[in-house]
Image (tube, rainbow, N blue to C red; front, side, top):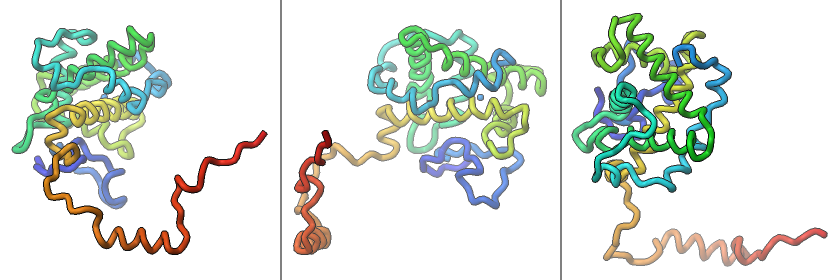
Length: 245
């Protein structure tokens, strides 16, 4: 288990590594470094992408803010809730510098997104994708280890996730679930790094008072002066584009 605090703290995929590198027998979950056949691959491909879900971040309370009060689940049942907690903690586990996904309120955030899209937007694809993926994890775990995913050992859980965390190496039968894992991983990372804990973990250096501001760096200012002397007027001075009638 690596303690590297880069944004690749989740399951790494071949796309993030050198082309010649192949996955290990068991994928390593680093700190930086996903129903049953309820849905076909076509249905999975139509699920809203994580990029379309992220705008919801600005409309809901931050994960950290919700942790101040007991959270009432909106979409997940008790078993799904426990599974999501285990799954997101495997993607972003706690380490020496910060807590893990559940500490930052990631499951709450995902639950809120699913409920919002299903009940406010009338779009049930995200819920279908996530619920189906969780059911698939249980099905595979039962077939391999005779227990649900949440009750399997960490090594057994990783063994299942290895199959869908490496897109280029997934079998034909596992490929639909690669999309599930990609979605859950993206949602987990987005929720974690929009929380107070995640921002601190980066660390984010914005919004910090700097008492020693000394102005523009001389080398940068020299370059600006040189460009102005050569006739550069900047985008603003060029004025608005001409209109065609």
